[in-house]
Length: 537
Image 1 (tube, helix red, strand yellow):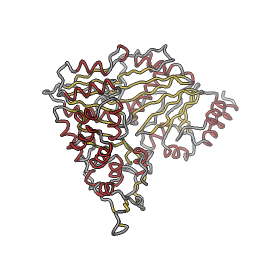
Image 2 (tube, one colour; image 1 turned 30 degrees about the vertical axis):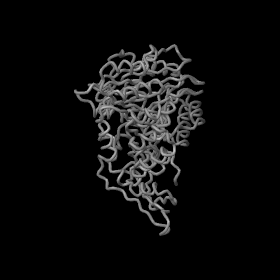
Image 3 (tube, rainbow, N blue to C red; image 1 turned 135 degrees about the vertical axis):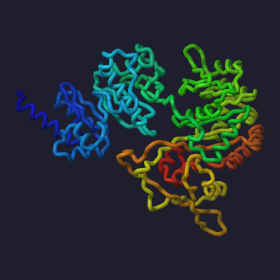
Image 4 (cartoon, one colour; image 1 turned 180 degrees about the horizontal axis):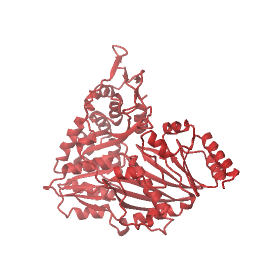
């Protein structure tokens, strides 16, 4: 018989959850699962654990859904009833796999696992975490240890979002399970490890890269999710028409080097693979050296680097040059030796594509110089440099145009003025039906070149579709073609001519490309400032 103390405890739990705007979604003999709109207060979790005597699991739900359920007469309304009444699928729960999602999207392939193993909590947790991350379009999953256990966060559209908090009993099992999946050394906890494993879904296959790092409270593990059946084409890169045609022109060159630059997570891999897919034909021998091979492509000879046995970029490149290649893709130029061999390949009748971790096209030239590449070699080998970033796109369902446009300060540089006025010529997207943008300008004085520019301003709001105001990302590009005048300046190492020519030959910078998207209502000015680091306004 249920005693009075039980009802008092249930009432206290209910009142505590209501006070912190939380919903109880499941409760059994060992655990209680709650849903919140954001990461809950530590005092709340401690109090709930003390009152209930149970392990507390936390799920993150949209604010609108939390508020809707809190308005119900009984806050302990079942999740199933709520979802059926609102014609929605059940939210994420770690106690089971979401059968509806698995049926419609990607179900995990369990051929390599025993049936009894699938019932273990840690396997269910990790499987469901990966499935949910794919469902939410996440690029990375972070398993972060702390004094109280692991915290799981996922990166969606460049921003991190908190998921559930696994019970402390899984602190040892989580890294062990992930290492087993990637075939890493389970016993090694003092050194970082890197690996990769395949995740086979019913419709899409994914390569998941894993990186471990020892921290104060345990091993931090990051998973990067890569869709191996990505639709790769130059048209889908969203390049302005002029840049699109220039890239195709350079890809048809018999020899030379094309460099794609940007920080980690800027979309360089997709750009490179799209170029390879465009060049992929039976008349060409295309070889690549990568660390690791992120997207397998039929018809291309892809070689992964293996530093454990001394198979590095330079060693593979030397071997590739004896394999009669037409086109070589180098995953990343990291050191002087790799840079020199790549340049040599570009000089001896091969088209070389590669990446560098630099912030702009201009920084790339300085980086090559720091790697020991002479200005003459750069001038003769490099044909095109592409710098890029990924910016978040405004949700089309809730974006709002501000009634007050953004007014830029006085600009005295005539070159910048002309580029701002001609921005519409640089932003005619190859796949876009949007009208060209127009940047308004008002003369300050008839005898002065100072002008003030105003531009439409859009705001991120947030709705049930996006929950944040943003949905998806789009790339912005900065192209630098190595033309004869610039080649001469590089060969002569003339710093004065070099700086002037760089400023005059760039039709569009990353910031200007971003302004074009702002005017179209694709992103916000704040997002462009954050990504490019520009400080004009």
